[in-house]
Image 1 (cartoon, rainbow, N blue to C red):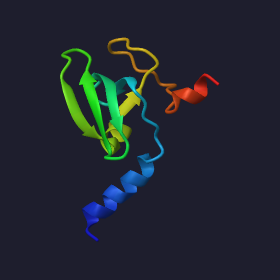
Image 2: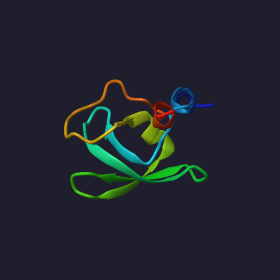
Image 3: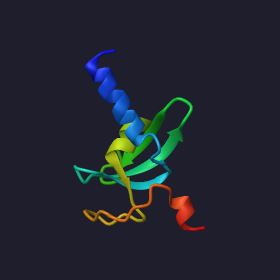
Length: 92
């Protein structure tokens, strides 16, 4: 197995338990606001829409788990540091 494949598998294992849900989110490092519009777990892709321009992109589940922080609400430029990766459990 190549070194890059080993790194990907390690990274996949690290982020595989992060829950993704439809709703607002923000990129961890670029601070771009997104909204997850559609999730297809079977084919491993997500449709994300940039809040500012409305442009939609198809991203992999792995990319979303690794790069997005899921927020409770959208405040431009504000990141929630106490985010819950599974917001459904928060309400119970």
